[in-house]
Amino acid sequence: MDIFTRLQDIVTSSRVSNDPAELYCYSSDASYIKGTPDYVVMPRTTAEVSDIVELAQENRIPVVARGAGTGLAGGAVPLCGGIVLDMSRMNRILEIDIRNLQVLVEPGLVHADLNRALEPYGFFFPPDPGSSEMCTMGGLIANRGSGMRSVKYGTVTDYVLDLEVVMPDGAVIRTGGMVMKSASGYDLTSLMVGSEGTLGIITLARLKIHPLPEARAAVLAHFNDLEAAGRTVPAIMEKGIMPSACELMDSTTIKAVNMYDANLAIPDCEAMLLIEVDGSPCSVESGAARVAGCCRELGAFNVTIAFSEAEMKELWAARRLAGAAVTRLNPGRTRVYIGEDVAVPLSAIPEMLREIRNISKRHGLTIMTYGHAGDGNLHTGMAIDTRDREQWEVLKKAADDIHRAALRLHGTVSGEHGIGSARGIYMNQEHGGALNVMVSIKRALDPHNIMNPLKVGLE
Image 1 (cartoon, one colour):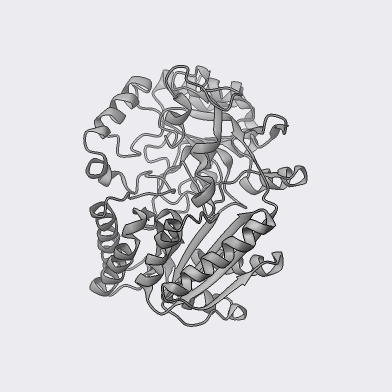
Image 2 (spheres, one colour):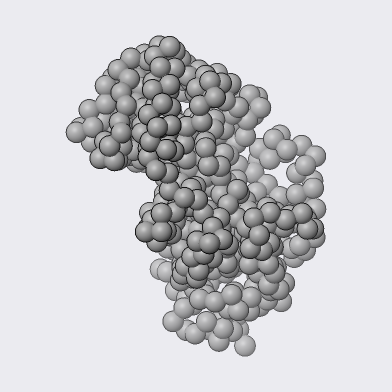
């Protein structure tokens, strides 16, 4: 019996395909990386995933798990062909347990749908990726994602209590439990978070949830000096203020966003900080005033505070447009996600901003910089004519310079988007001997290298 027939027996013929047109739809994520699978399978249960992986193990067929395909590093791209597991049909919330401050969800659940379900209870899942309306929980966990509110609330790593994982031989394990802490055995949950599908496939996740804050306020500060804006971020923290979010947009980003939506009318300046505080009404009012004062001390002008939900929604809408707006600066060009996710220590933010400006000038390439400055995670946006080989070469050189600048400043090449197949070449420089330990773990758990091969710099 051939592989296609056996896959049909596991999930029925309506949920497996080897049609070239359908395979093409799974040949890329949101990155520039391409690779075509041999089969696409859409499981609905853990048992089906287990049977598929066991079949793949027997026949040494690569298996790549995929959520919504919003990844920016080629993590869900099947570079070696094989089976793509489309996890989007495993999308249920199985349990909302308010008494124990946790939920149990399937990996195909869209992030925003989880928070919509939690809101009536007065709770939320704090990690807040920009792709909230599209990305799935499995992908968020597998890439150790975070988002805009990780300054105060942390990354997805801080919220995973337990995972159900199908291992490379098809065995099903649980990595944790319902308790909020445990000192029992190796921390397999943390091992799987951020493993990008190279060690196993997540089929269930038990997650901590948090009460919604009573109040929020946003401080908007404009600067005529980009590095002064960068210095303001650690200065706020040094004063003992912990904002829930702290976002930066440089002048290039501001120009692009204004071109995208003229109604926003953001003033021309070198940089803008959008800083959110939350908590009790009293603490929010005091915190917002202190943040505003700190911004003014560091040279900000036109500092405003928004307390109403309508005002804050408008401010956050402008920030969320940043990723899409880059192409307005260069009509007819396409944004390429490369070099877009570096993170550095807070004290190194001004220098990293300067480095990116210099890289832009050196290569004659427009680069917009924005991102989660509150935790040192800076995103860059670059657009080129993807049909022009010379522009590709310039783009790759600029991205390489950005990555290596972050590493020189004791940073990382990925703050939240993952390594995938886009950044593996930097893993040895960033991790040194620790990469050998990662490779040893991969070989021990996946000796036939069927789980998402050629990813995370492990080969």
